[in-house]
View 1: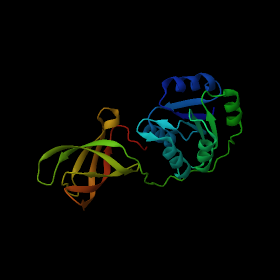
View 2: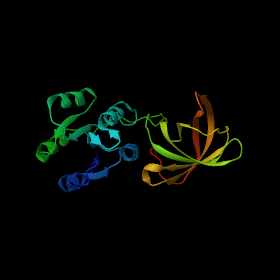
View 3: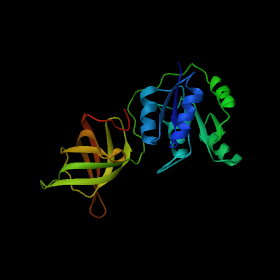
Length: 221
């Protein structure tokens, strides 16, 4: 059975997708774009159904990421959105969308569209890449002076094994830091080590961290 990934913050819409398409496809869904990206990497779906307007994230940016990211660029992305107008459709096509459907969805046409997606797909490279994603995280540990700290920040980019972020704590290379995802209620991810520190203007540092142990789910798998 082919797999479909649905990324939409509307729970009712995700449920409708399961009802209408679940007999033919294995439907995987998420309301969180970062989790949606992780699911795409994990499951390699045969197609992605993507909403455009979601809190905190632009569907346009996610569409561009899917169509340009080497891990996902061979997966057809079908935009399913409440935004009407020919210009929106043209813009999505320019960003690489396979097709565009306005809500309420004509599921007969959507099934026809999905049936046109070929089953043969080129292999997807597995080399690690970095993705520009702004993910709210919390860092806990000990600074360069030996003082314990809790620091909330946002990633600048992420990879399977690490991330880059800016913080107001002076950290030493080699320090071990606990990492939490704030999007999921301070969910513990694991421990990471500081591999790079760069001083920025003001009392800020840009830090590169690499996981040495992952226990919880990270945005990329």
